[in-house]
Image (cartoon, rainbow, N blue to C red; front, side):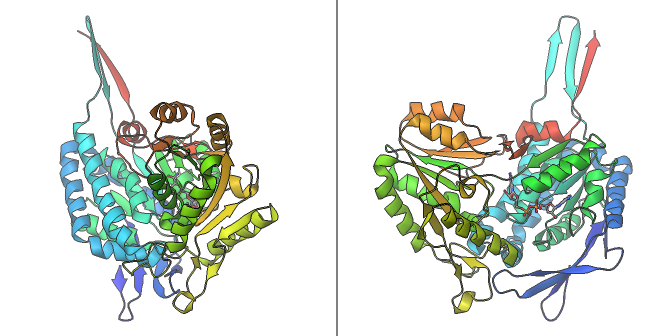
Length: 488
Ligand code: NAD
């Protein structure tokens, strides 16, 4: 990635260890959502570029050292890459804040360190996790886990490098080679990361990064080329369906982490301070552009007025502004069309009978005038049947729905096309575990939110996706488990 004297960057693909332009020379721009400053021009990948990247990854897998190294040897390199991420933490965090508008404090202290953590965790997991062996009289059976091959990793813009690292870290640790395609809104951090990874000793062709768009452009071959052995995708449900359809032709296994519309249920016996903080973080972190967001807030009727007053007061106290300022809580939304979509839902909510308690508008104060800023918004008066309550808004918009009984809360929580996450605040442990067992969701957080142990399965049900990643679940996906049975 070259930086011009005016500060703009020029981003190319990394294919087989070489930095190259798009085959037709085309580029696209990436801009800061804070003020629309031009940050860089980026190679706009063609289908031909996608094919070249798959070819490079295939060659590195079939002929290169990486799949033939032991997991411990690979772990040493991945630890070196993680160290490089740590020593460039400030630079990577700032690139992501510029590109995606996320709060710099959060990038510095949460997401960028998680990239390094993901690399170290999966490096160590691949080297040290137990494996199965079943001695049975004269028979000895055991399981081998050779790498699957070439992995296409397609990631979204809302947590660019952290989500990409949930893909490339396990894929690489288990011995695969990777073609990564970041989202076109946030191309910078993946390009810089790839430079650091090469410098840290990752062999050429093991990690390839192509930039650009989906469908017929660069991402096409990443999903449809028969030389791809696994596709790991995080993004919208609409794109997920297309990728699963493209992958079906070659029966390529897909792990798809898709959208969400999670319920956050607050019972009248909850610790009200904890529940308010969880609810605020649950929907306003990342300006609501979080797949896991608890964007349906179900509150037991007895505490509705009190809870709503506290929640609204805290929402109004959140500082929306330049994500580089240390006291900012919410940065801008990713781009203009996305802001229009979010505001469109707020307008729809009002036609569906919703009442805007706070927010509901684009922020255009002087310093924010050129950015895509939206106020933290709280809506009441809607039922769970409305489109506002059923569709993913992916912005700082909370829909508050009252309930009376535990059964009713569970029924509303589960009445969603999505099934990604659930949040529950109660001090009744019986109730907490009872509901967790009946919740239609891949992940349930009790009296907390967003905590992530990488050994746990991550993924969703229904329209939220297919498959799970994390610990042994990643090993199953990124390897070809092989049963070996021997008579002694
Ligand atoms: P998106 O689906 O528009 O794009 C995601 C990626 O897919 C991008 O890299 C894009 O270029 C690529 N893409 C688009 N069309 C493609 C095609 N036909 N073939 C191959 N690749 C294609 O999603 P987005 O707007 O970048 O991200 C927001 C969405 O991601 C939200 O729905 C959010 O819930 C979801 N998400 C889910 C999780 C999860 O873990 N479940 C995490 C983060 C975000």
